[in-house]
Image 1: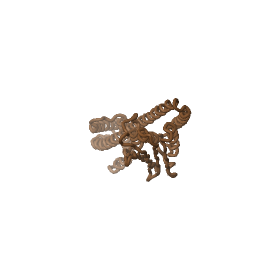
Image 2: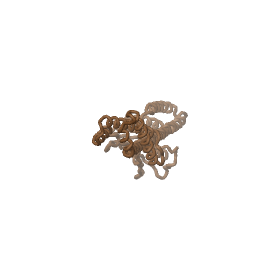
Image 3: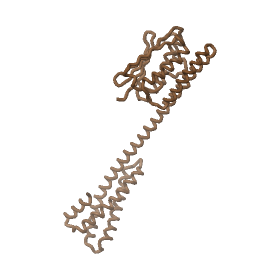
Image 4: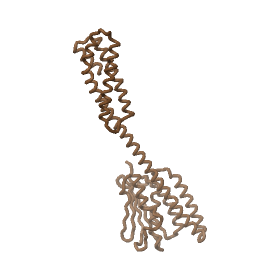
Length: 326
């Protein structure tokens, strides 16, 4: 396009076709080659400061080189007494101005483009770093769950080996099945609610060996909510929290209720348990509970409103909201 435009200008000035074509082709090829070199240099080196001075100096250098190489080329192609060379000498200032405008525009565009690409790469690296950090923290939280639950179960088994060896043996079998299933889904990010409920039932079977008839549970899951997905091993620490504050400070039978149903693009799970505000001590235990679950939900879904708790008439309620992809 530039070659054709320059040729048409020369044609309007009355320059013969031979000289016009050679000048247009040679000058534009040299300028294109130098601009290509400049763009590649800017691709691998962009100054952090004084960028506009960099563009000005680099554009001036490219224009001087362009005119120097063009002059050498034209003097090699045309004979020394060719009258066209005088026209070339008289047009250096115009050529330099036009070339500087073109090169500086290209330099500015290249700088903006490569700066944008650099920012995109930096943002991508930042996002990847944050993703790896979230995954590492999630992994830490999930690994923290396993020894926490295992220590509690082993303490219970230890107590039962003396008082009721048969229950201890049954509890070991239940614990083995639960841990085997936990290992299988350790690498999964989400699982169907139905599968999560199955492993929750295994956990409750273990706890019922420990507490006997005192622990009673009711699980109500809507049929159309079973296919909804949930982060694995999310319900077990919530139910463990309900058992801890519902059973530890009483000798009465306790009923823990788990309800799950779907709402607008969400899975709503509500866990209720009775509690005695005079004897229930939130500071007991290892501290792995609601705070860790809230943190885990935030890391996965980037929302801090997915876990809520409430107390009403000696009933403690925990609600979790799990977003579902549409």
